[in-house]
Length: 257
Ligand SMILES: [Ca+2]
Image (tube, rainbow, N blue to C red):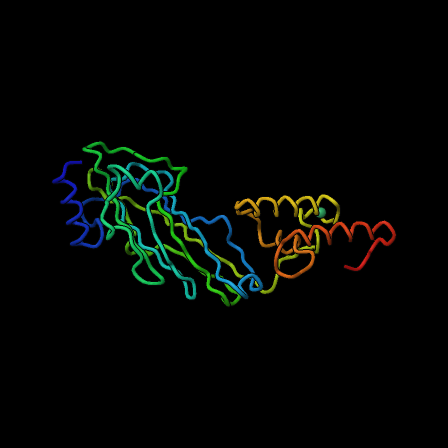
């Protein structure tokens, strides 16, 4: 895309707010918001915020030259950050100015992107990769409920190299907060329904990783089961408690903790 074309594209975008009225809608594309975890518990939020990484992905891309996307989050969720994901952080595919990718309020954010790929109307990214990353916080004390992290359809669109507006399908993300704790069996770290020596091994493995600075990535249900002493932390004492429990099962099929 030539420099002239880019400024035309940008000035049109600035004037109209959208890529606008230039042409009939061409073939479409799909924007979606994804997160690895979407279900949380009030017990989990009783003493801490939870940080959620939300990826914006683009599927079925017919060749975009420019993208507007605007996001919103239901209260009390807060959008704390928005950034282009690699490979968009570098090279010719990025709008560049901070102003093109920013959080505009605790509940909203927007990005504007265009390709400067000098005339070729082609897909320059891998559809399997996120296009942008939103950092969202679920604040401590968030009550049970369903919360949307969504696109603003009035401010989200795309155009191709010929400045034709593309139709967009928008897939929002729902985050669910459930009352209390997940179903789990005390001491059953591996979640197979039985408390056994293998659970103690799993807890020790977790502790070993944590001790060398790795952050073991475990679900809240796992943490609840692994915290055999129920003091809110998974530590070596939990492995010991699980082994003691296992020893007691030799003489009592349903021992007390
Ligand atoms: Ca188990």
